[in-house]
Image 1 (cartoon, chains in turn green, purple):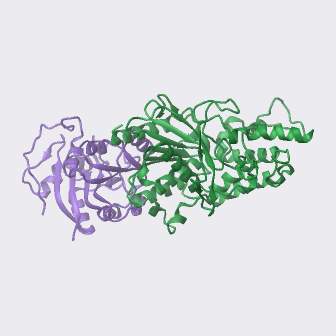
Image 2: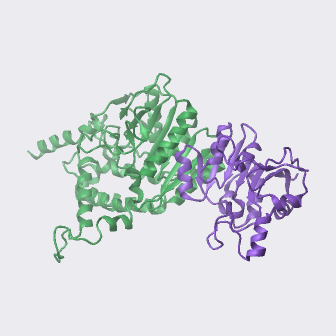
Image 3: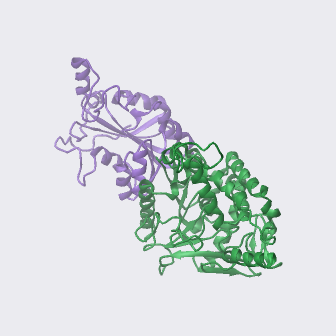
Length: 391
Length: 219
């Protein structure tokens, strides 16, 4: 009886990973994804969403790269949670990344759990989810897979690549790996390498997942469990890093949750505790714990300079791409100094670069939120680039 | 030697020229060749960069104020937030055809270092600045006994961003010290007109309210 329950649960839980609510491109054994880890991933698949129409010249495509816990559902309602898309403020008809003007594509990253091959996908060799048998992937692998998707869609050159956080890392990798395919690049709240502090935070999150007895060495699908508590704790910890002291204080202060006095217990007395618990619980509904391990690892490994003898500028030498680098004053996870380092490298490489720091108390997550100055800058940058490209 | 004083003194010329651009910016823009790569250090709200781009120039900007930068980027200009005093050293040699300091030099902490970087990064430099040797400024100090305030320099001494004033005469000395060759010079009178008569330097220094110099590295 328990076995049947687990099997049903398994089918239910891996459905979005194998047969997602998105268009899927499946690459056969003849088209392997060459991974930095030194192995080929084949067969594999990429799930993606598109918005708008590709023009006749195929010159108006904008690639959106999602962040660690994002996915391809940029504008449409999420198929699992029913919530609005994660970047509805930025992308859509009449929005700064205007889907009436541009053909917007967002693929789920390799290693993700929303339809692109990842640890939650079925391993064709075993018929069971990959789990930890899935090869470790890098940001460069994600970008390589996206390039294969674009080849498949017949898009040789992108008008723009945009993304925040891990998405911004992909944007930088795109400009470095395929400079001739990127006309304009928008790395937001990003960095050329993951800092020691950020690796440290990620390690805490991974340890929280792996310390959950339900994780079962990554084989929780096969064993009919789900490391919900571990993943929720990881999310709670990470979520703090996406905000700021000022934003937390503004939203919650020291206010109590549905009570006037402390309970002298370990209930969620404070609003901020209740909020974090909610963040943790809702996250595990839509995200795979192993995926969280893989994607945080990919970010940790990201170091653009390492591929170019330690000199970031060499990654962009001779790049025809125009860049708009954006940071936020209260972002302490990817602080402005990291964006400045990108700008210095781009200047040293002679690239055309704009850089704006936006004043906000919303922390790293500001790129996802209602920031009128951010919208004005993205719109202006893309308008200028569109003019230069004759769009 | 300088090639100056090409036109007659046009006292009636307004501070904004045809098309609505500031005359000092038009003077700067006229010194830049079409198709050149230009870095405008202290580009403000991007008025000069827009003027240059309309003339087919590949322009970049650095601006200290966040508001200025964000306004420029929203206009589609390639501008980075940065400080002329600290960030110019990050730019490689000969990265630009022209580096422009439009009404910026007097606001830097180390004008000589900035000027030297400018000549290293660009093959040419263009500097415009308010002339502190102008007769009205001299009069304000001499008779008023206070730091001067004019239309071009409207700030009180305690809140002015302009911390290193110089006269045309002073600037020529700096050029000499920094190894800059003066290719061309234009002075603007109080009405924004170009002073182009064959006049000695002391006359410019007394009647020029603003000055624009085209410089190059002394080989």
